[in-house]
Length: 172
Image 1 (cartoon, one colour):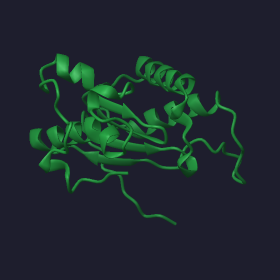
Image 2 (cartoon, rainbow, N blue to C red):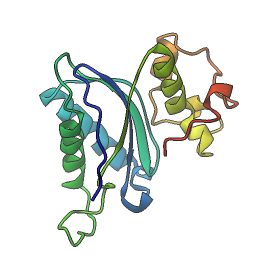
Image 3 (spheres, rainbow, N blue to C red):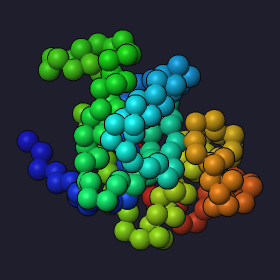
């Protein structure tokens, strides 16, 4: 039995890694990415949160969320998102009666300060390049990178080479 303890911070800012079951490439399909977008929107409408940055790769996603003040229930939101997607994608059912869409858990990290936030936003936007899916962040279509450029967080052309501060970061 796992003794993993999550850090629940009301109104917190969190980095997440969420992985598909057995690293299936479910999000190589544009229809499944559209389904994930609907799941996020459906959940946000019922349990508000803000997404600072996101990238969806074929077998996992990374994102940063900000929760409302006095609310620390990111687990309930992920449960709703995963259920929404799982009900709509055909997949084998496990011995526990669960569809094999997602890994059972997800990884979270409480963002500590502005520098920590910046490194994780950079990690998210550079991830498709790191995985060899795109030559530059702007070439990956399933990312918040273009919005980040519009906000002035990056100059055009950022991330064509790996930033030094990301070399030791791995959250797969």
